[in-house]
Image (cartoon, rainbow, N blue to C red):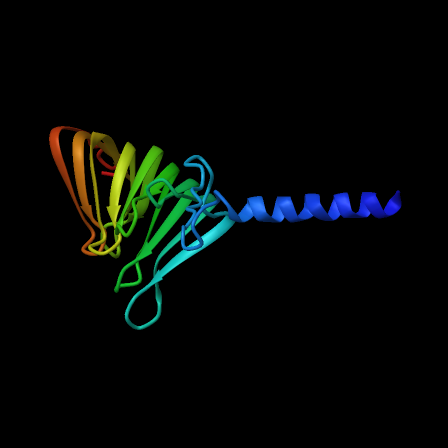
Length: 189
């Protein structure tokens, strides 16, 4: 009886192996594995990305609490970021924001939420503090732009405007429209 059981098991095994070859996919058929669109491609926490100039010195340094690549469009999202730009004259500009996004193969960082630029327009001179809701920073040209409302403070003086273009390399800021200012004269006259 055990011999009959052994033959029956062998026949069943042969049938299963035969069926796996019949009606299956052709041997050269490829299966594509598609990652779910909402899954991260990669992510880093507490990381720094550095872009160097031709001489190897750090030109743009972005530190973020979280950096995450989105496979659906290969963009990179940044959370709680701090961007430091250092021009040829070694003046540093610091840009902070709640969030940032860099599209695939792009040189522009889109910043949103409590965006603040801090740096000196001239040397020597007062430091400028610029606040806005969103900003695009072109890492190639070192130009920051926004079409949102902005507030620029330098010492005791303040300006508000709608829209701004800041050339961080040249240390120039251009306010676009609806410019209003408040200048406080020095008290020691």
